[in-house]
Structures are given as C-alpha cells and as structure tokens.
Length: 238
Image (tube, rainbow, N blue to C red; front, side, top):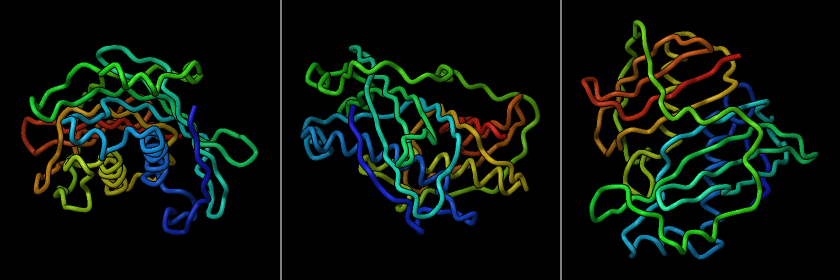
C-alpha cells in the first residue's frame, strides 16, 4: 500500500468549484508515479532499460468530487501481478477517511525496442501488495459502442497533451471524452468512468470523438476520423 496527502487547489477545480474529472484522474496517476519514484523504479530508471508501464483499462467509480481546499489522501496498491500484466487499485479519500472515488486498472509492460507488450520483469514484483482488490464492479475490458453516433468537433494532439512516453497522457483521453459530451449539451454529473485504451495518439494526430448513448450513460469512441480507434471511454452519469 502506498499513499500521499494533498489539498484541492483552485487550479485543479472546474467551474463548480470542485475537483475536475481530469484533475481527479491525475491524482490517481500521480499516486502510482510517486510510488515508482520512491521505490527507485521511476521513469529515469526504466528508460535506459527500454521499457515502460502502460495503462490498458480503467474503471473509476466516483462518489463525490471534493471541493476547493479539501484535504485528501490518495492510496494505491497492486493486488495481482503475473508475467503478462499487473492489476492495481486506487482510492481517493477525504481527511476523515471517507471514500470519494475508487478505481481498478490493468497495466502492461511496453517494450520500446519492439514496440509491443512484453513480459513483466521479475524485479517489478516490488509493487505487489497483500491488500485485496477494492470492493467494486469488475473492469470493463471489452467496451463496445453500438447504435447511432453523434460526431463531435475534432481535437488535435498538442505538446501539452503528451507525457514522458511521447504519447497522449491517459487522463487526456478522458478529458477529450468529457468535453465531447459537454459539446452536446450534456451536463449530467459523471458517476463513473471506464476506459479501454487501444492505440497511442501521438503529436499532431487528429482525434474525432463519436458519442453513443448506452444503458447507463454514454460511450465516447475517440477515433482518427476513420477506422482507427485510440480509446473507448464510457461515462456513467447519475
């Protein structure tokens, strides 16, 4: 189990005065990144080895987005690791220990030399915890949108969208999807997010969101405007 404490900053809030969806996802990502750094297993260590951890799937359940000034704690733990993948949970809590959001995720090791997913090295087992999986619904590993899509305004990947792997940061895909839903006039509160990442969007790529209605909200397919899909984001609304 690993965690860090923080306080919700004005720069992290949306127009409601509460933590934005984008900033909330970044809190979760930062927690696992801080753990890697503190274990001496961060970006500077993995880059010379030609490998990186990449996120394949998210499921995030949101109870409440904390208001400006709220003191929070973020926790993460890896509850399963095999030769092929790792499964990691997260929790965002207030200072009283009340859960504001919980998440599950699936990760793979990316081999920069081959450009493909590789085996998880044995030394990465330093992340493995005895903590059980969070009490939540299963990961949605095979998201499929269906029905009639509404095409939204395209986004072009700029440098501020990129991470240290030089592809679009995981949280940016979610931001693209939320913005697309807002473009259509949907202001419903988001109670949960599932993401299946399919292809890396790189600098200069065009991202065209296609929005579909689904049983509990909307599926947003982030495409290149043609046959390629970068990610599918399911936004469950209250």
